[in-house]
Image 1 (cartoon, rainbow, N blue to C red):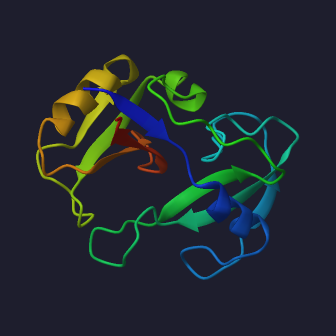
Image 2 (cartoon, one colour):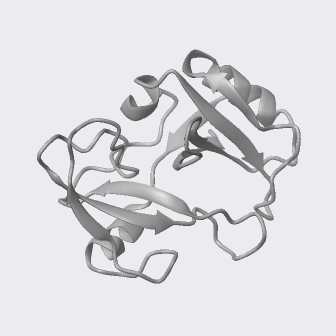
Length: 157
């Protein structure tokens, strides 16, 4: 089954950069990246060492409900090109050994039985297996160590 990896929407990233409150109602914190393990959720690359970055609480769901997890994310503070949706693993995912993936329904509820920590080399196959369930509308890729949201996976047309 064809899939695509999708980064955060540019309009939302621009809003955060302009001072829009995060999921906890606060402006993003600013810090300088050391270049290690600081994945921007917009370009899906590590924020380069020495570059300014934003740290904020993000909720990758449209509605508030019990499954709408909030967690910390990083964004490049300066403009960066959004990672183009596609089937190839984004750089920050390809360079990490494993991730937690979970399927969500159209109502943004976890589809039980879809969550697993998988080696990065198996993500595409596991996502195709998860999407075989018609109740799954999207898959989240999250850090296997910290549960931080990385990107979403959608069925590709």
